[in-house]
Length: 483
Image 1 (cartoon, one colour):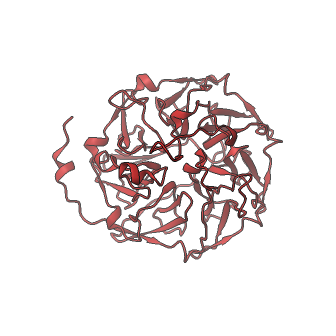
Image 2 (tube, rainbow, N blue to C red):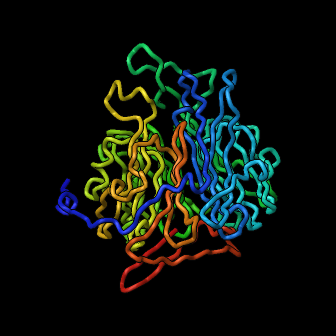
């Protein structure tokens, strides 16, 4: 494989922005509880998700941080997720209890979406055990409707989820990723040194199918996992993203699997999906191996008009960065400058965002290993620096994490990552979670004077959130598109 000279020799100018760590001054006081007590139980490695959302629809983005819990028989402190309301002055107030979310659960991820089209985002929290669906009342509170919605009575190790309208009936449906068949009673003994218990990798467990729920429009959901073609008990899924892979106007899904082939579910426009990941070239690495897929995001990062993909993987596997042409994906991580810097990191959350407002989408990634004893065995760090790959607009990326301030590049056991404009100044800020550690809020401050334009689509015939809509800007012969 030939690497463009500019990838190796380029010395990019200093970034035209800075990140400022405003976690403390903004009033964010959060520490994730993995429940770890020495038993080395598998879910303790996965860490929490996070989200920016406007839960009260006042035009200002609020923050939600997912939390774990202590294990039965090892209770220490009570821990819950946290909901912070934006005070519109750079600070946040903890409204968890007032919002009705002060509930113990071992949470993993969060998906916010207005499934009943009332103008207020509802919450799906993926959990160890029973997932929870909270309906937004529109009065600053949430109600647990898990059972009445038809989502109750299912036990799994669910990791992430996504709201999307797969049948285009104007109602958001729900896709849930499940990891492996696991319970505390059936935890497997694994060891790095042959003596002491360590955290297992997913090879020690059987896979578990993801779930697809169709929105009936009356507040309830129907499990269509089998009838839609989604059922696959070999999957070990951690991340999911929506895309229009074949550009037919119908939403498809890309699922990042851990040690199993990734899945690309092509929407067949009749209520069913077909996995086309193998023929599309995104199921395996270029060497034909299933990698340890963790996080995934989709965006048109090269302004080609077609979706590109980033998938984070285990250390020694590097990030997968894919361009698509004529229905086929090609991994361009090495040529783009993303591959080699990510070779020795274990990536989790990743997002495409235009950090410097130059019109080219950049890539932010949080890293961190799964076992704190790994440094004694393999010489790989447990806490690892996040990365921010700046896009030069020509398909070449450069990691500027160490140059953007705010302690951003300090090693962390990174897990969740989200972007939003919490201060409404036109640039994108970052929210980050760590495993059994604090959350971080980084404010983006522009130095180069670049500007942005903002759209807020509202669905009338489509779902109200306009999830699945595409916005394209044509300017001086170039095209920028956002999904």
